Length: 359
Image (cartoon, rainbow, N blue to C red; front, top):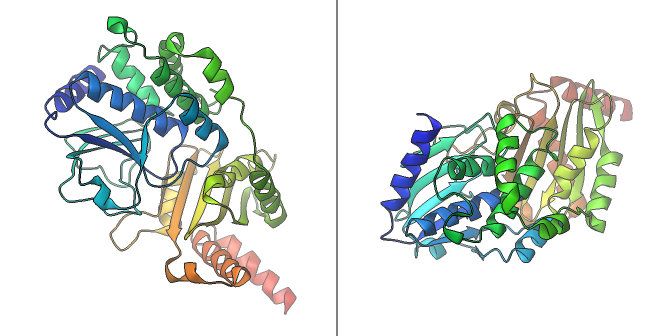
């Protein structure tokens, strides 16, 4: 199906589902691409006669992301359990192809649309699915819909500055300030830039580090182990609000000249969170995550990724009740190393040699 047909199909699906309210449920900690995409999808629903709410389970965890939500007055509903979703009839996913794993989705909630740029473990079953691997941002896909005539920006005198600003920031952050951008990402950014609020975009673009995030990066450097061009490091426990210190540390470590792939992990609330970053074309983050961490009892992968980055989340289960933080961290570290060694066997060999020397 071509892009024009995709746009027409999305319009048909949304226009035919106006009898019940929609919920756009964000996966994980909402980032700029997810927030911008959700705002774009909500805008489409409302232009086509459907009511829509943006919802999330985990907190917005990065300072500039919280600033984005505040400055643009993004309406977002935070939920803690699946029962809160029973008020909605249709479910839409953006920047993800699976719903948030930490809550149970009501059976009455119909998965209507999925729009994403990540490679899924399995193609989701929804009435409309548009997954494009040749772009770096889901906001790029929504910009393409608008440019091709589905509720174009600025039409009928509408003020689309808030949505355009969020989408532009989503593309900017997902492409590492356009250094990773594809031609489609550049085209999308050029299309929506005239509708952005330049002052707001400038304010959210001033990315700052919290003290906790900076300390986490320091712990990652202290814990760093390097095998050839692969690096792994733990940051210990970080708060949910500063969870993005983990990918920040992975990005920073990848800047070292002899490292092509890096994994950084830590404890966030009741789970292990980790991020993978790579510059090596032969490393597929989604495949790496699947091989290392596998799936949960429901067959859902613990991790996934796109062309240059990936992430994983593993529940601690009963271990999360452990009051011995040092003992818990040793178990987490041992578990992550054992799993990653499935893909990087030299890691376990090196640790075995270290244990032998200490004995």
